Image: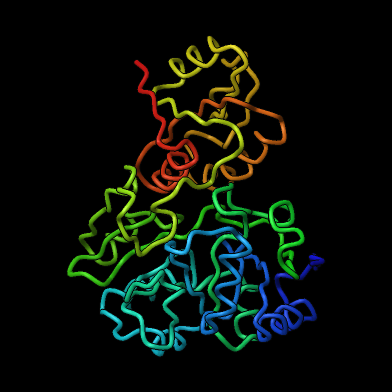
Length: 342
C-alpha cells in the first residue's frame, strides 16, 4: 500500500486535504490526522470493519479500547445512554480540548471500539483540522495514536510515516501537536469520577470543576494481566523507544552523579541537569515547566533511538499537575523500572 502524506492548513476547515481524508473515511479506510494531543489513526467509529483495520495497522491488542472523537457537543447524545451532570460541567470547562470522558455506550457504538465493554470513551478535540475532518466525514471517528503499538506516540506527521508507512493510505500533516501527550481520561460511569489516565488537563483542574476524583492505581502501578480496562494507556507497555529505559527518582545532583558513573549510559534529563552531565543526553524540557515536558517527551524518546541509545536513565518528574502525566508515560516506557536514589 502506498501511503500519501498531504500537508494541510490548520486554519482551513474546508480544503482539499480535509475532503480527501473524509472520502477515505467514508469508504471505510484509515487516515492519520493531527490533534492537539498526538496524531490519531482515525476510522469511522460506527463501522465495525473500519475499526478493525485500526487494530491491524497498529498491531494493537484487541482488549485495548479506543477513544471516539466528535466535533460538536450535539454529537454526544446518540453515542451514550446517559450524560451525567458532572460530564456536562467538564464539557463546558474543557471541551473542545484534551479531555476524554467515559460513558455508558449506546447500541450505535460497536463492541470492538470499547473492547467488548459496555462503556465508551469520547472526546472533542480542539485542533481545527481534526474537527473539520470529523465534520466532513459526517461520522464520529475512533482514533488511537497513529503509531505502531507500544512505540512512542507521534507528535508530528513524520513520526506517523516512520511507523505506518505502507500500512495506511493517507496522513494529513497539520504540523506539530501542541500538547504532546494523549488526553486526560476520566470515567463517569461510577458514583465518583475516576481518573484513569492523566494528560494535559491535570487532576487539580478537574477537581476544581467537579470536586472529588479518585485516582486509579493503574496510573502509577502495573496492573494485573487479567484486569479489563476502559481506557487506553493503562495495561500494556507503551511509549517505548528501542532503548532500555530506567527511571531514577532523585534530585538533580544525585541523578547526574549516578548517570555519570555508568559506562555507555544516555541521560533523559531536564535542562537544569545538562551542565552537570558528562554522558550523552536528550532533554525533555525544564524541571519547572510541566507543559514543556509534555510537549517534548515523545520526541525525546524517538530522538534516543535516532542516536542509537541502548540504556537510558530518565530523571523522574514530579507527580502533580501535568507532570503526573509525563511520569505516567515514562513509567510505561520504562516497563515500571524505577530506582530510588538518595
